[in-house]
Image 1: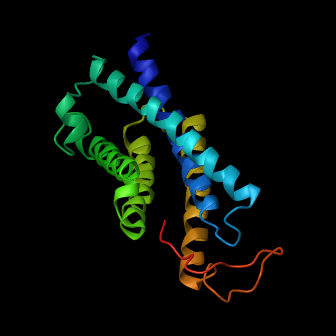
Image 2 (image 1 turned 180 degrees about the vertical axis):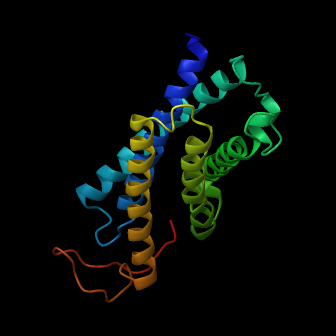
Length: 196
């Protein structure tokens, strides 16, 4: 069995799980009723650590996809979506996801130099990036139709969509705004509505 092909496939599925965990932890970290609560600080810390691990594995996934001779994926295909010869639509979604993840990462590096609202607007792109990763795994994953592969994809979809919908409900209902009723003994703080 081709080691690069196996590493590319397996890293893709692990990446989907890590990005789903990162998304969920990011959502948990946005709950602002008590900004210094241990649970919130822990979820923020874990969000950063899981995301860092995912980014490292993303490099492995991309490099093995380019180096593997099973399919022809060029370095240009990695950055420019929908131009590759192999599964151009599904591979293009993975490329778009990578581009969005790089944009979110870049804005995170310069977060201190941009307005908080600007950073949050860009950070919202991580939701779209996660969704594109999900569809990329379903469309290009050679194991996506196996019972275990489909279980990972469906499980990731359920967890990620649940977290995203919960976050959207918080934004739409203003659950983090001033005057919200206390929950579990925590008081809301001024200006704590965000889109990420």
